[in-house]
Length: 348
Image (cartoon, rainbow, N blue to C red; front, side, top):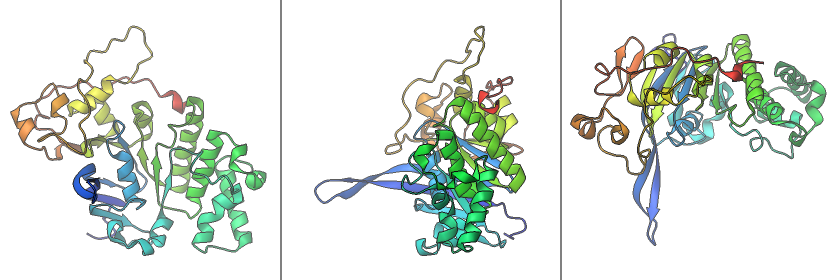
């Protein structure tokens, strides 16, 4: 694989298991398969979204990519600013600083991700200080530039996080993530803790920054309305696995996996005459500590056959760029969302 042809990020067979301890001696008696053999790529300038129910492994996947968590196995091939492709999963924890210059994370809760004892200058300039970038005057100039870039006034730099609203704090988090000019931003539910009107402003800011700074986003979310209007491609996860991955319009108009179709049917439509034609899913989400045999979705799938109960489906390409992990993808006729109202979160 040459650097010229490599995607910016290539995740191959990523796994993250958390051991289950029991007994007086705390022996390992099992594993929680939070991420179970996940593979995808992200190209330069692309927005790839990971979606799914709570507990499906999307946040754990994101944290493994930036090495906030050490993966159990698999590859995380990342092309750094020098053009070299490195396997982030195998980089020793003591040598991760150069990697973190090129990939940064925006966390879900701006109230807990910012140190309340540090002012905005200290918060935003901390990455530069840790990496030894510039003098103090250079860092002051850079913080001024970043505050303006995210729509905050430079004179705010001496204030502390408690003086700001949730939306303003998330802007500070974005400014901090941009401090070292990274190539990849991993946004973990970056707007889900904000009010809808504030979501609009932050999302529009992220889209503007992506175009202006040529950023690449891995966007973790659960709101399908937002995902549809900001993503180039969408990966749907279920119990630690990728169930379906496709270009956004193709996924929403003609899903191939029954789980994806069920998620589409659950999206509320602001029309009192609209009636849901697909019955809601029955049963509970499978436990990642004790997943069922075969397809993890088969206990809830109305189309499950004996093959689904015994044979694990591989993620395969059924249409150009459209991958799905379902034995019967070619024969199912599933409904998507053709006319999903534009997300209110994108209106100002």
